[in-house]
Image (cartoon, rainbow, N blue to C red; front, side):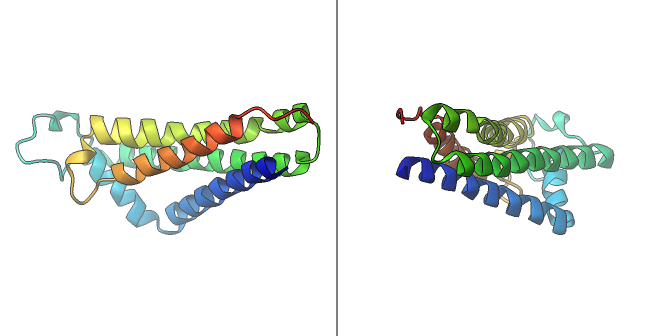
Length: 163
């Protein structure tokens, strides 16, 4: 029971984290939008950078990228809350039932991993060379959250002992 409770609590913890990220992105739109805008414009990468041809300067695309990130966060948040609730309800049920209850949580955690890996580390970090910016660099946070969420995903995905 302790491992099941821990799995459930960790899924709820990730759901809470994503809820706060989402809340901050919605209530402080300007600051968070500016982050996306500057990464896409590549205006703080190294001087003389030969990769700036990749920059996107059209505000339409900045808004679209930001909305895409927020929408992805919302989906991951909802799935983690739903998954946490399903796990909480199934905590005392047989192993097979608890295992089936994991599906929304696993989907939400996987979506979170994809967000950090694809949107921030791959697209932002490598394509738009975010790693070159001292001001608009979210790679450390993205790497930390990829590790945290990945560990939670691996823990939750572990099969249950037969009960």
